[in-house]
Image (cartoon, rainbow, N blue to C red; front, side, top):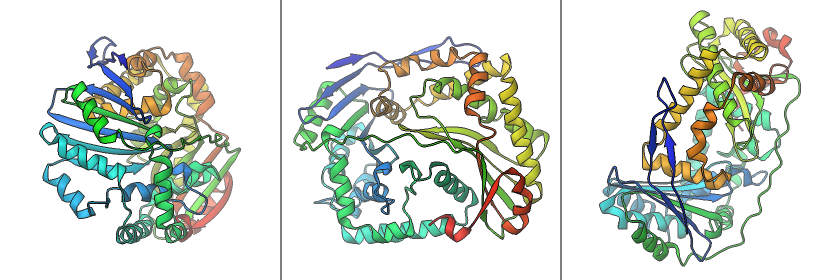
Length: 456
């Protein structure tokens, strides 16, 4: 058993001074390999369970996009002894929550209940993890709903732009798969595919269970051993995915939405993985440039030029890679002005970096957001599982704000030049092709995609 005192530092708008100390965590490994982390958090009479297993939608086979998402969703839609309705009624009756979902790198099962309902909540939580039955009727219902959702997304330009950007930025990389599924893959997925994915990744020696809330650790550990101790080990996955390749040069993908009165845009390329040594400098630099209400992009494109109501840049970082992107929209008539202004802001940032005032504001903003994101058992459990899944140092939370504080103006300038790309850019537009295509040819080779083909 290991103990680690987690100390979090809260940053005010003026100084990195005020400290918040949270309870200790205890870590245990059951005989079947299940890793268990407990944190007593008694501010509210709530208990939050979060189990993560390594392996997510990046493991979907070619042609079977959506297996991970569909399998995890169906885990709470029927077990060996409970129907979907039984599960829904039981968790609703105690006012709790229960879900299972898949990300690119891992799957997560969560449950939250009041302390007085611990027995019921733990029983339901364990049942959907240990005994999902994948009933045919629920598979058919889920498949039908996903197919309908795919069609619905075609009327959401921001969703279309995001999906097309991801697909083109990653190419054939596993992160580029349509994790919600495609029409062809959803029609092809069988119960055996779903059950096979579950049996491969949901094994105790591939899992971490974090419990945060109002309990006594010794008693909680006994309950977990009694509930999950007989869960049988499996063959642990050896997951190794090569990083994605960065796109070279500029290219434009124009999704033809003939009735669009505004053009949705996403600019970017592949980016960083979550353990990149420049991660903290990039967080600060990105906040200055395009994240938050006082960013450079908001000031230039919304406040000064009135080209858009919203614009945001960001780095989406996963275990084996990620993306760098800027998302916004503008009137069809101002597409060129928007693109030119965007490229000019990137050029200026790469050339000049930030000011001392911007650096301080950016550090405070990121640190404040980090601290505010640690105010509930659910948020704490998510951070603790991140440490395990991504292999962060055990003092990751303790040192987070200090690492933000250590970022210098030189660091911001360096990462702006390295990661805020100007010449190697994918530009995705959702717009009437006939009107927009002639305008954007100067930015790179234009590939026109019809809307019905954009989301397969």
